[in-house]
Image (cartoon, rainbow, N blue to C red; front, side, top):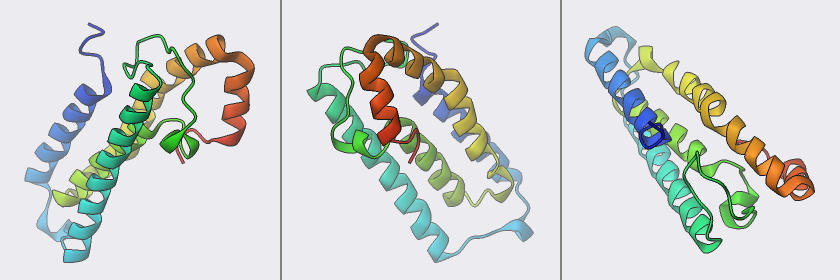
Length: 149
């Protein structure tokens, strides 16, 4: 079960929910505009860039990027100087961008709900593993870098 209990699966589920809602979203709630499309594209692009940068940094440090895995290194370089969870932040930005792109105004609450779900399901457990393994180093890192931004 852990093989499919990964954030990309939950992101795909959230996107499917947004797409379904978008089909039934009333036209009078539309925020469709070229600027909205631009913001949607920027969110999706920024999210994908964050994910890629984080994966590259984690590969450099030879540590796992699987949420249920045991970390081998405390990554504090690159994008991890700005966010302790750039992959999850990237996932959330992608979902926001897709929600905007689908013009699914009614589905907007799914974005913060997804972020909260990811935090409870993955981030808190990962942070506990990092706290146990890297103790003082992780505590110092948490004082310098915020969980999301």
